[in-house]
Length: 401
Ligand SMILES: Nc1ncnc2c1ncn2[C@@H]1O[C@H](COP(=O)(O)OP(=O)(O)OP(=O)(O)O)[C@@H](O)[C@H]1O
Ligand SMILES: [Mg+2]
Image (tube, rainbow, N blue to C red; front, side, top):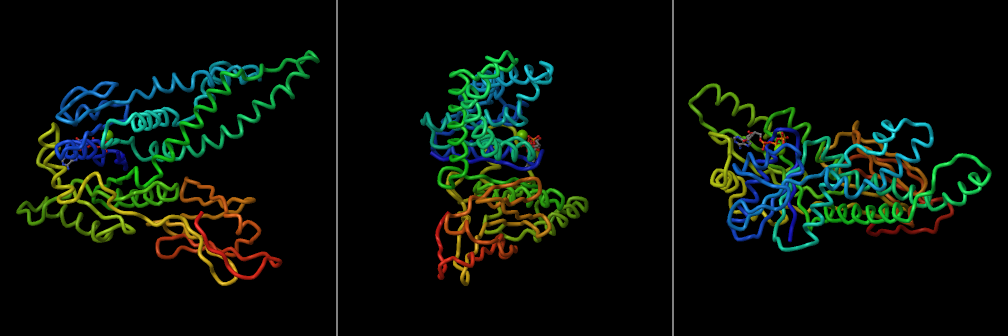
């Protein structure tokens, strides 16, 4: 079973191309499920038929589902939220504010993602195509498992230590919030496990392909390039960039010809591939691609002889190379410009920031006593030089992270 996730800026064609990819896969014999995490009912619009909150048959071998993220949020987060609200309101925050504070932004999308993981775990499909929400939410959605995992890591031991700190206070007659019960701790543990599994699924290039959809316009491409860098930074494997709504060459209409020339220029800047990921082209259709036949036609034009289910490109992973007496940590960052990257060392971690996205890279044991001696961007990679500490034994070491 594989997961193909279509992402990109708002309105570029994610839903249409997700539906098209799913229709083509089903026609070619794969048991396929297409899901949307978008609360608007756009998947139903693209397929031209109703799609429910549970997988619904929409064509031969094709199921579609509109994930009800709110319901998942209620099921998984309610217990934790109630507890946090109790603690916060005990601390003088109004109940309404506490409710808001206990709802982390982007949480709904994360629960939609947990549903995808659940569907993968249940099996029964050869392919699950995911239509992802627009750029900002998608990034948040994708980085949240890591961020939330770290947040929960801090919260759980704190909660366990609660009794030791709070009980004496209560005995002394001070008002203090109640300790989290076993049910809250169990809910936290379960949530952390589910998040880690969802993150692992999305970050595994053998199981998941992310495809970045763009339109052949300068502004959209620039944003697409940034998103590609951020996704790569977070370790999510982008195996293709899809240029959607590409106009045909040689139109007799001067307006169409002018637009087409602009698109050509923008695409030429991009090249045939983006840091190795192939550039696929989906042509502008004469009408909105709605319904199974129209989606099949669009998908055939997009994939041609390619297998829509296959891994279309395998990017390089984070690695360590020997470099003189020290090491060089190499992190692929395709399409990222120098002024967009910042590197910062804290303890055993290297914090790498691209735009608003930060990834904490745990330094391999051998490098931890070393000193960060410099960083540069070269060949689509961030290369961080780590010099050995003076007392370190001679000879460089290399290894995978
Ligand atoms: N290749 C194409 N040719 C013609 N129309 C297209 C093509 N691709 C998408 N469209 C149309 O463009 C509009 C936006 O497409 P779509 O809804 O798939 O984008 P989206 O990225 O999912 O948008 P949102 O970010 O709002 O979810 C729709 O009306 C769709 O039918
Ligand atoms: Mg959409």
